[in-house]
Image 1 (tube, rainbow, N blue to C red):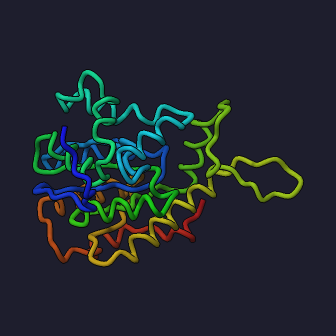
Image 2: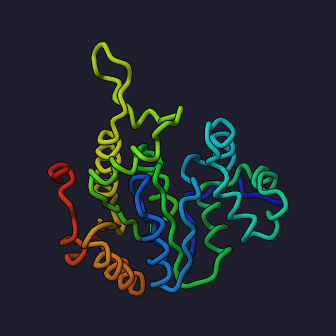
Image 3: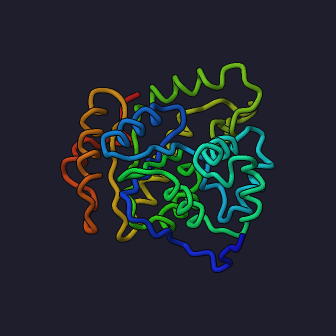
Length: 253
């Protein structure tokens, strides 16, 4: 298999591409599936793609991870890429010098439909991962998804209850004379601060915020579905979606 060592930074696609960015332990998958269905497309989900600059970097992260973060991508390749069905790991290793953009191109081309919807719940913890998405898909619509802080805390508590491994981002290491404390509020603030900063500073990138739980979730879904059918190079943050924004730092618990 010939690979391109020039590592292009941007994918070239003729479909509407939407990237949902937000916190883990939220109804993001349900929202993404509904959005893809409404925009006549495919929801690829959170495949843990932005963790590496190249496929080789991504494979190293997978190898070192304490959890099976490789499995979503491997499962997708088995189902949608014939050459990778037998051994996704070997398929990726043969293309380890491919860039993030090349990997995205492969995934987008492997599904049918007018649109493709990705999600990523880890990028908000590392601004470099957000930047990787923005560089690879400058023509995409990036959606900063919001969920109430209290609901996120409840979901995180349920998810990590009784587990030995809790990611450092969910711990508070700054309490004097105490062991690190489980503090999901810190993770919530970190993700939304990072996404707000990265998207607001990204010149020429189409982006908006959307509430994905509670009474405003359906309105967000309806508006985004409409926008997915009417891509515009000048789209920034339309007034109709802006009305659904939460005040990140002032939102009541």
